[in-house]
Image 1: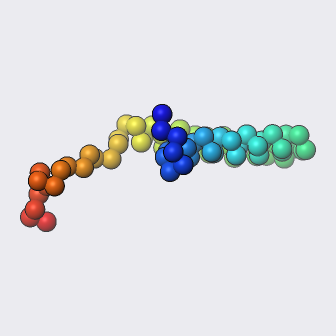
Image 2: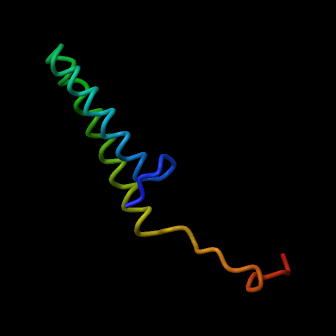
Image 3: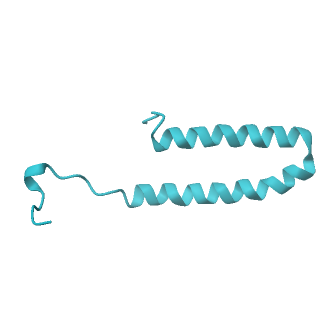
Length: 73
């Protein structure tokens, strides 16, 4: 697992920590706001999940070595 700050894993862990703090603070202070922010969190979670599936299902193409590249372009 690559947890460098610039990696997708690092981004995901950072987002999970921030959402945990936000949800914890809002739940402790105001139950009505918590019920309002929970669908926002659910929407973010669905977007993150679909992006993660897309990243693993369709990774970017591998770079070819310089001698194997098409030099016509």
